[in-house]
Length: 170
Image (cartoon, helix red, strand yellow):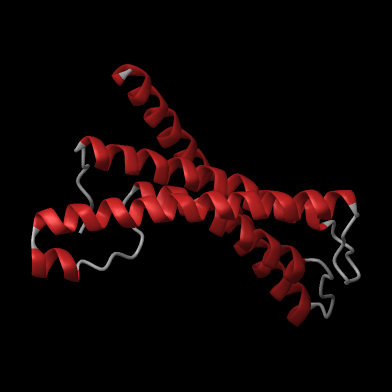
């Protein structure tokens, strides 16, 4: 059982790292596309019609692909006031409680994002712009990111319950 848990944890860690790398590549693409669009707009008076809209949608990809990795690395915002005031025992209980609630929240987020994505796919929702981008392909990253965030919170909660707390960067 311990070996299976470790294997699942390593798989989640690798997937989160892969998603974070993909988010970095998307950020690089957005940066280059905006730079080229600025050159085209101000020097050649030929702005593109797609860069702003696509960059906005890809920003959603960056957020949802990077969130689980940020949690995995301990980069989410943490309020440590209770731990500082009441000590480690209360702090551990607070960590277990918040991690459990966050796991439940991400499960609900995953469910609702899945429903919204499926509806967008089924009903052919598109953006009301000239690009007419299909929303299902934009929303699908919310499902993927919520799923990885759920798995990461779940493994963190299990680790906390088992007493295996990894060191967090300060």
